[in-house]
Image (tube, rainbow, N blue to C red; front, side, top):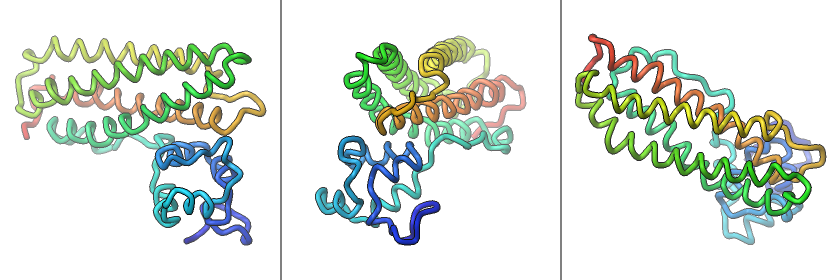
Length: 238
């Protein structure tokens, strides 16, 4: 295994500490959380130690860290406008809905833990926890509605006028989600953790920032590409 990013030549992956790896990129905390690895209080342990303790192959953990793709830096595909509505709907489900569903339980856990541990000093953390929890629940219901009720209709090539009320509902929900995300940005000072914040604190803020970036791309694809596409007389059928 190679060393992730720029590391001292004397520190191969298995000898690096969990805290060191998370400090390099706090989004890695999401991967460690998914493997049940404590990167906050137990961050001083080496990769070799935690893998042995939890029965994880170091190669498996390494590949998960390398392949993890945070939303940061992702852009809307330039060719999306040429895709058929059915293909675009599938892309949104596979690329964005799946990503959101993967991140929600982790970020709920992070924001809940940070509020419990640090809420006495940073009173905004309780609201951050609650706003994100409500947003997550609404998004899960929203995505389920799209997948079960709306996207199948789009894939069937139904006329735009038959979808106008559904689209209006979805756009209103998108606007509400954007408002909740804006409130989270305000509460977190643009997702900037305070000086000396612990790893979980930093990972929570980094995760929320990624969540916002993905939401912006996700909503853009629906509002400004998919919905506009099906409202066009030349919308392609799949």
